[in-house]
Image (cartoon, rainbow, N blue to C red; front, side):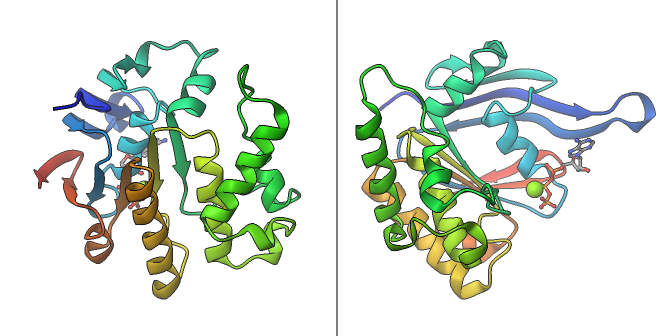
Length: 228
Ligand SMILES: Nc1ncnc2c1ncn2[C@@H]1O[C@H](COP(=O)(O)OP(=O)(O)OP(=O)(O)O)[C@@H](O)[C@H]1O
Ligand SMILES: [Mg+2]
């Protein structure tokens, strides 16, 4: 069997200090293998986003380790973290987080990580390729305000793919969309998981959406309560 691509080991995360301390993650242990599609399901405030941020190296755990591809992200310097993130992960947010005064294409171009091997024109071709992959090539010169929510989220997904990272993290990616558009987005994510054999970890509070994944981690009050 392959090595896990994500390892969360004895992770605790506390916010604040003293009497106001909130324990957002409690003794969390998870192993995720390459190509898996895992959903994290639980009620509001149970720690789903915190877990995703800690997994992605966006936040430091209070204790414990997080390994991506065998690399301990809690030990990487502030200076090197952006590069590691760009190479290893794509992140899709509930609120899309596109830059308003850039077109769809420019939003993707903006995150291209400089590469020694790939020339600029080859990288730009990759930006077009990911737009095609989410069926947004024809709208590449549109600004976010000219796109529907579902279209904006498809651009955000393309942006998450453009550096070809092995892992895709999605935090309530359909939370701002109607259910029909949400299903379309879930199908896009499912297809990417299959066709790219990309590891996907998707956070949701919706049982129906969690079913798109093969494996579901249930969370409650900062703990993983079931895994199957
Ligand atoms: N920056 C912060 N400072 C203090 N407490 C925080 C912070 N971020 C999160 N928390 C607390 O940690 C707990 C877990 O929050 P988290 O955002 O991970 O929940 P969630 O499961 O993603 O919820 P939702 O479904 O509403 O997005 C909550 O009690 C929250 O109030
Ligand atoms: Mg959240």
